[in-house]
Length: 470
Figure 1 (cartoon, helix red, strand yellow):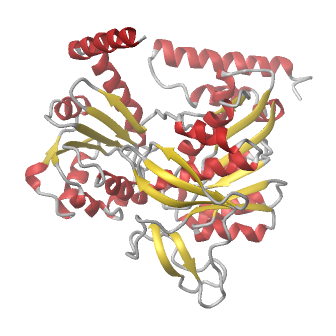
Figure 2 (tube, rainbow, N blue to C red):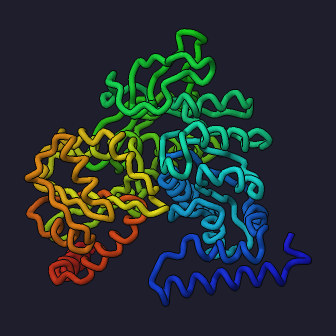
Figure 3 (tube, one colour):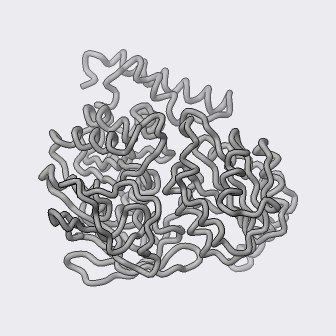
């Protein structure tokens, strides 16, 4: 593949690595996409090199859960001693995949596990030929870029048609389950009715039957349009699940789950991340791992050890409180995160950061579609701080949701708002940033931890205790 163009390829790699060095070391910024973009300008087919170096490839696409599912799969496979290449930082367009390759240039990998942006899926599969494709769900996200969900659905559907691949599909999303019409090797996963299921219809993105366009009827909702559905006109319904979470019990933090397959009646596992949406992510990763032949016990043990960073339910331990950062980026996600906060009985404060940069989506009308009213179910919430470029818009949305104005504080400076929320006398501070704010807020938190004399004292004491125990 590289032969004949070797000079151009190595020039592209050098240019990409140089761009990465400048971004990280000189400008102190992110280097998750730009290095790949530079390399692709010089050698446009560099993704084909990635394809060649990965013996097997898994692509994860859909609206929500791509990054968590990809990181969890990477963790599971790597824990088995296998070589894995992944784009773990959420940069999921072609240049992001290339950047991950530039950072880890092994001659060969056992597995490539990549999350792929819905709008980039068609372009990526021209070069990367997946053995497995995971489709998580379809929700409205960045309407100014994607349009309505039907477009994202159709783009991925059309791109999958010519592929010789196995599909790992969410049986509980009607749009995703309709991919069975492609007649690939289809494997379905899902979450059965549980104590968090409801008959209440919330934000429903796909209310009509993908087969005959009649209105779907639901036996229960898990979140959004995910749940138990059927069409009384044509019989379209959840396909049988090869892999299923059958029981969900809250266990601070996260959940204790019961899981079954076609061959195994029930298994117990713990996944220490809040939200039913994360239960689906766990089920997706677990399904893929078992489908590719990994030993069940080792997979469950690996999931129990999983620790995730990058602002997706990431927890920081300060001397006097926990700080948890949770990315929110669309109506379903925001509503579900606020619902998950209601399970936490600790005294808490909240910082919400709303940006409208291109990567966030310049149209912020989505906050009015979200079930922000879920915040009224959150107990022991002392104060709410709103920050970011559209801080007042978020405060206004909270006010219309019924939140008392006395609890609302607007501060456009993230640094200032973070300092205020960290100084609150609470047990836990939740921080909910949109996409372009999540890395910045993490850097501020880490800098604050490193610069805190209290934290250094706490760290010294912790190390002393470790030595004593040893």
